[in-house]
Image (cartoon, rainbow, N blue to C red; front, side):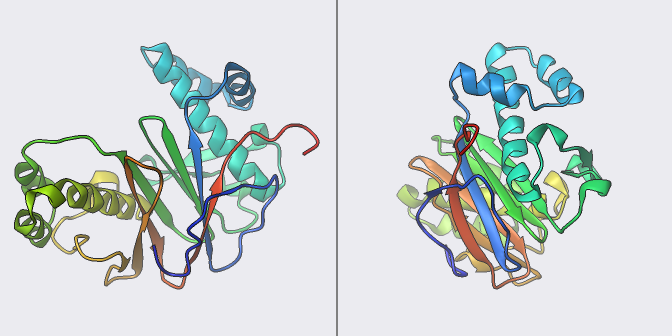
Length: 242
């Protein structure tokens, strides 16, 4: 990563301020102890509990509860509120945001999870994050030709075979992070964007950065504008009085 990024993950404090040029990235495991899952579940809204219940498997329900509970716990540290007090609204294409009457300060966020890892990005400007666990894939050329811009797909084809899987995931996570930052989901047009080069200024009003999330994972961060100082935090549930 660049743009003034701290490269060491530190344990996140119980309360945080977000500087004007800062972007905070939080890392947590979805596999939490039952007591932690219970505490997180108690902070969710009735709507979130209903959404969790619609998942068919218990493991999927638990993952949703933990991810949403961690998101609430993290955002509450910036807003000086109890996690259960937070209310959300859906923006264009379903991107979640704080409810309008809770936006006492500019606070944007985005969440992504894959396998057992969840990342949450928090910033005073639009931000998107994506993480993927690296798994062997076949037909990379076919997927890239359908999902990537033409120059991205060409760069991928030109790489030695041993480097292609890593570059595929880097392009994928950068593109997804950018789409999420813009609130477009997978509707992001392919042709104008080239994410196959070095991370940094994307050539538009967005900055793309790779995130060293964990062994076996690839992650990327998209930030509106430039001159971002990225700080990395490890999440854990704070006990009362900490």
